[in-house]
Length: 336
Image (cartoon, rainbow, N blue to C red; front, side, top):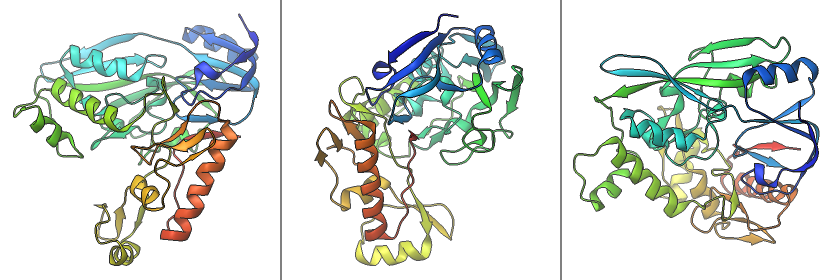
């Protein structure tokens, strides 16, 4: 095992936070991973580094999961079952699927991170969640070193949530994810957000999955910063779901408040809108700030520490609570 010491993790997290791993190893196979967990139990997993905020150096052994590969398990006229190893880049997998004319994940284009982390928070965008296409998750049980299969129902998916964030957190390492995608007869979802408007501007009336993907990419690029240029982790907060009674009270003061009814009793409201109304959009506190085009995104302009970004997030939470009586939940995994 090639374990390195005192390795900077700046290039391994999309916030670009400068912290160090006391011990670090990059793993390229399930067998190698099994060998490591047989000897080391006190570990810290690092994949695409897109859904975490590092606030301190890591004393545990940092395992960089770099297991790559895509395989087709089975297919028929309408569907194809594809297994993707955890180290594959998510957006690259989306583009590969589109190149094969496999549909179902085109709305999830340009989401940062790797495939292995997509089930953990049940990534979603523009009316689609990854749970809609996941058929199975394979994970290594750290205690025994054995591979375990989780069905879709086993994963207990919810809004930005799964069993891997709760009951079995820290007990398993996801090694691959299996998806069921469509072939030819695609069920396009273009009604959410600005996709229809973007397609109209492109004079596209009969879109393909590639057209939808291109539209999503254009929308995301117009609103979200590229982590390679400005450190960020995409959406920092979850969109809160609030009681309809509270929403009715808020609408009296804010008649144009955006909303997405979940049921007669619950309404989802955009966290970005709340943050913008509270005056944080585009604000900068040293090198930590709120993005000028999308208030849902916290950014590291260059040399912010994880603690400074976390302090800003807490300031936003307190302000939203005071102003709207809403608890804003952090989506990003804070490593403290």
